[in-house]
Image 1 (tube, rainbow, N blue to C red):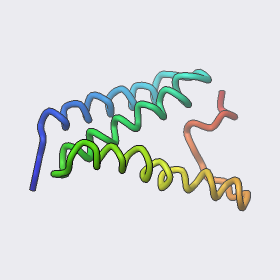
Image 2: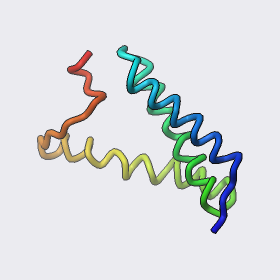
Image 3: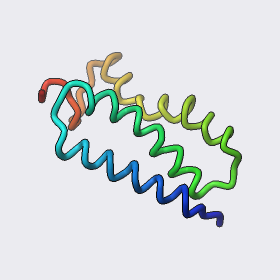
Image 4: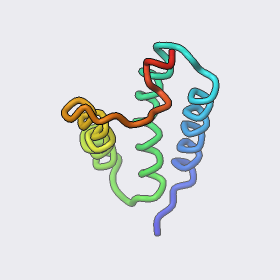
Length: 93
């Protein structure tokens, strides 16, 4: 199994930032928008730390495929009116 320590350290850094945003930030920009941008880096470095692929392959997967999969709940909510609990709901602000 492949393991890249420097990529894993960056993954942990972005994970810490995301956790800090989730716990202490309550605004309408950082949490919903900047947090979503940072999660792309979190996913990239998380995959890069365990996969033996080129940077271009991992970046393509993160930028094009994973956000689509992760947003399936949002799509279902819009199509079916299906409601699910979330911690980043705009109603909480």
